[in-house]
Image (cartoon, rainbow, N blue to C red; front, side, top):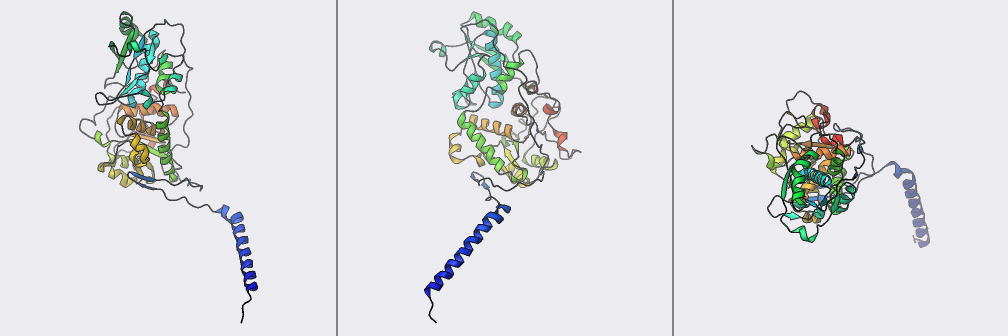
Length: 421
């Protein structure tokens, strides 16, 4: 039987119209009720492929002892301004050393000395662990933020006059949280009798902490110097924000929340694991490796799907036991884009990245006592992120996370508590 082409075309057009109508109905009335899962995030050590965040509703399961919201805090005092202090033509020089956990205290000391003497503070350089390892302040921190924050508190110059930039300056050692009385009796006479240009070096001892609670009449500008003046330079801050965003995108079952842990394999030696003082209400020593950190987090209720960030550089086989319990455990090398990893290879940048990622984590756990831990706590108090847990032996009686809250928070024994209300 001959086939009429006109009938075939008519049938094809009719079928096409019904198909289009069906798609329209599906799109308008069925699709909104179903939202696809996002592409699976694939993470390997040294390699990361991120999918775009999905639009589906996250699970409401708690999956661990998470706080629902961060605390809302604000600075307790207004910016302290000059009040007719004696003016001088002198300059105070200093350097930032030993890593970001020390930098805030060094800035606070330099500001205290320069403010009391009426001197001008010269923008510091940043010194690394190796002799001769020196960097410009702007390579690590935001210069404009630093100078703007201290405007009206102390005069700051980015570069000193040429005639004094290379001269041999008297070097004065000062204790952390230096007082006006100390400056008046120990530094002012030298400042007046010398060239009115000094370099100060802050020294720390192992039996006390610059982050213990110290309240005095100068605490306003100490707070300003410690918790508002230092912020990473723009490119570094963007990288930190990107890494935090990546960690949150991988934390789907915990509503974007992650745990940051200060855990570095090189710390686990007989010498390194000794308690660094008993300040802040701490009356015990602790030193946990990856396996024991995993046991602790599991014990207090964190689900195996919890995303964990470690301050370890690279990967160490001693951390495998932690990843066995919490598979979503990563170091910065695993989540940094390759091009950014090539830019920030120096130790100071990597320490700074660790510091600010730990400050942003929804929970922070230090594997051992250190100034890094103390400094991160101060930063977190200013952000209202007070979920900070101190590990305990796996056979301890309690499995409640609230029983392991850092004494810095539980006893309000950290200096930052006098800065934020």
